[in-house]
Image 1 (tube, rainbow, N blue to C red):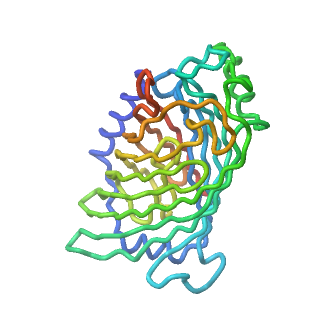
Image 2: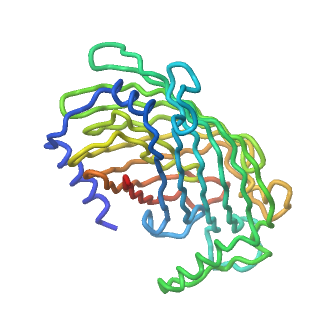
Length: 339
C-alpha cells in the first residue's frame, strides 16, 4: 500500500519541472465544438486498492462513450454551446461490513449487486473571459439511467471467483441476506461551473457543482467542488463515477509529449432514499437505517504521453448507515488511449 503516496509524490515533482505550456480555454472549446471524434471516460475501482478491506462499495466499473453533436448534425444543437450524447454502462458490487455472515443481520448492510445503462446529454458553454488569464465556463449534464439490482446478475459470482483466485475466499451472499431482483430507473442532472486560470506552464481550475438524482434507485442532492491543476487543461472534460465520486478525465485535444494533471475534491450529499440500503425500491429485502448526510473526499493524478494516459485516485466515503464501523477508502484506476 505504500506505493500510492510514492506515485503521487513523484507526479508532483514531475509537474514542478514539466516544460509543457498551458493552453487557451477558448481554443479547447472550439475544438470540442468542431470535433467528431468519439471520446471515452471510465475507471475500474475497488476497496482492495484503497484501504485493503471489503466494505459496502467493494468494487465496480464505469465506462462512457461520448458522441459529439457533429456526428449527428452540422449545426450546433444550442447556440454558443458544444454538446454531445453520452452512453454509459456501470456495474457495482456491495457487501456488508462482516462478509463472513451468512444469515440475516439487521445491524449490517445487505449484499447488493447492480448494473445500469444510461443516456445523457452533455453541453458546455463558450467560455467567458473575466480578466487576463482568467475565464469562466459552465457545463450541464442531464439524462436517465435504467438498471437492474439483484438476481440473476452474475456480479457476485464474478467477485467470488476473483476472491478464490486471490486466495481470500468467496462471498457469502445468498437470498436471505441480499436484495431481490428488480428494475430501477433514475433521472440524473448535474451543473458545473469551471473557473479557469491560465498560468505559465500550467492551468488551474476550480469547479464547484450541484448534482441531483431522482427516481427508484436513489433520491439525493450533492454539492461540492474539484480543484484541478495540469500542464494543459484546455479542451478537457470531466465526469464523476456515481457510486464513488471518483473524478474521470474525458475528452481532450490531441497533444504530443508528456502532460500531467493533479486533482482533489469533495462533496456533501443529502440522501432521501437509497434502494441499496433501504432493501430495494419495492423488493422488500433486508435494510438498515441510513445516514441522511454523507460526504466524499478524493484526490488523484493523471499522467499522459502522446495518446496514452493512466490515472489513479483515492476516494474516501463517510459512513452511509447508522452503526457502520467506519468509512471506507476506495482506489480507482483509469486508462486512456486515443485511437
